[in-house]
Length: 314
Ligand SMILES: [Zn+2]
Ligand SMILES: [Zn+2]
Image (cartoon, rainbow, N blue to C red; front, side, top):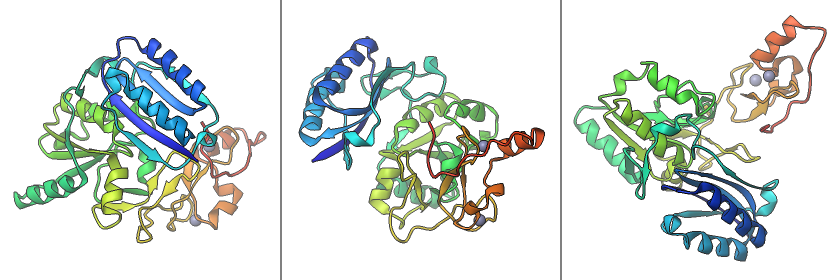
């Protein structure tokens, strides 16, 4: 019997390198694989292995005082879901590119948005509506993920990576939201811990975040609430739905028909993901991203054609 655990906490770590050595040794001794990221601001990890070993890992990790209240989310899977064990120290737990802007104390990120349980999200929307105010949902993921699922009427910033958020927030595009109630959301909640604090620092006055992110919201309301579409996930499935009722809101890059299936651009080494329907994905000329198409037009003698794959390249 195998299992995976996912976890994070924001808390000051005086000696991230020492935590790294300890965590690496612990995982190796227990035969666990996965990815662990440690920074002066906290830890974020997902590891898998034999269920007894994972239980032991949780127990020993919680024995370290800064991690004693950390929540571990259990999930199906095991060591075989990870290529290796990777334990790294980075300047930030989530790479927004502004380590100096993020302050943490033993209660977590300082100055973040108000935490809401999924039920409280609905209460907020109703309460504000009664006051004549619409709550805005602000997508904290990469824009591509929102193509197949998002909160209804959500604001989706133009982001290819987490680092793009700062320029987006500083662009002035979202200044009309600064005196409005804004609920940030992301897959599991970790990004919004930081994003909501970065927004508040920039003058967004009323910022909320969803405890446990879209995952917990979906477990609570499925497709009966304010969510629409499917959820992009970072494993080989790439997309998952909360129920058989979920709408398909993604559109084929070529013909516009409904689909939730991402494929890598067909050029070798290109990691751009695009949505294709079952018909169009078999037409080679159409399954190249715009950047690679331009490159090919400039240098038609050297096509870089690979295979169209439903995979995420690192
Ligand atoms: Zn199509
Ligand atoms: Zn490409």
